[in-house]
Length: 366
Image 1 (cartoon, rainbow, N blue to C red):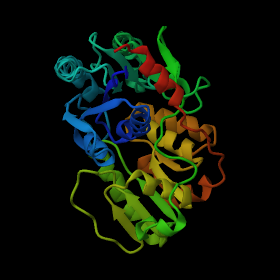
Image 2 (cartoon, rainbow, N blue to C red):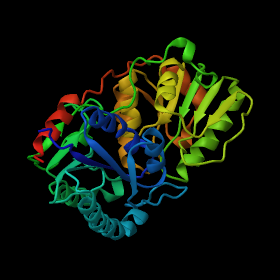
Image 3 (cartoon, rainbow, N blue to C red):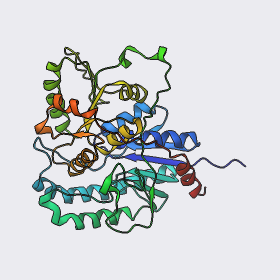
């Protein structure tokens, strides 16, 4: 008798595009191993996964919202939002319980959504944030915040950490502050590889090589502020640049401007080509971007989102290790940064989750 297919619900956080993009190789591997996959998401993350997997059933599942201002994420704003964040976690937990019951889900995989666990199925949390770092003014609250996150992490059957046990990509972030019995370091998660499978004659005009590739993402208004700043600095340089705006659900397309070309979104294979063939890469220091750079073996100019402590730490960590060249947004000098970036030694890693996915599917008896 043929075994019933496992039903797996994938739920990325809608905070930039990184949580969605790193779910792409996971969804691909689950499908390859004959799981029946469902996606529950919202916002730009949901739009991206709809484009990547049009045949997969999609459900809207709103989640936690973080509000950024033009001046970053301040101490006062974060304090004011904490009760609302905890309420959102409880609300999304109630909502996902309904979805799990209606779809008869066997496994739920939540990417950084702490409320998406259930006793009705095997629950997996994907996160590299085992040590949540706070701004200096909030440092006195760090232990308390990590105890709260630890409380929710322990609700899951498994905490899958997208890094290796040597913490090469996440540094101190993937070292737990408290003891967990259910951690699993699964290596990096990236949709990209060091080679592309497209034959040369199939490369389209949009896949031609550019001197500079800019990959934007992250919360507004900081995404737009960085976009405008980069346009201002890149135009006088007269170098050909492709700016991938990170807006998969946006129908408004910016026209070509001198040597700058704009796309709201690019499919994985095309973007993989540009990551491998552009002379220079500019992006945020978000964790998923750093995994993508490791998967393609490239160094980049990395710009942390102002006030986002995690990105500021990762930028400093990789700058110190000479993997990437980091610059603050308000001190940005792209001409100088590009001179420095090709002198660096990039991290080189591969996404290899086949065995972990196989083990995960075997844990659940149907």
